[in-house]
Image (cartoon, rainbow, N blue to C red; front, side, top):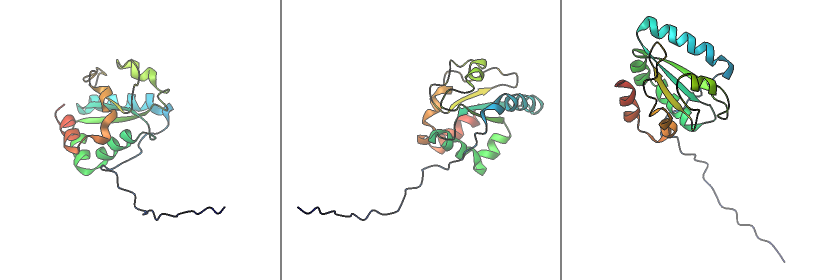
Length: 148
């Protein structure tokens, strides 16, 4: 009995992501220092702080970071916010920092918390909802942060 193998030609085209992507999350052990520095800058500049609890393995975290890195977002964010990218590993690191700011943990990534310069949370109710960042439009994301 002979076995025949039918080889199918598969195009080598990989669809581009509908959003830009970046990998901003550094070593998880830096988060405490990064938050302290951001709060100091926020106080001096009268800004708020965006705490992004996520990871480089997460496509939604990378998508949000990609939008933030575009000139349009970068310009808007720079006048309002200090941003801290907090690596949560496999949702098992820096959970103490999430609790410090009123979160019960990290259910999904990214969890995006906005705090004032004193560290008071401003969007606790919707912070966990960012785990769908890759499917949000750039306009919806821009409007959310431009109006806070």
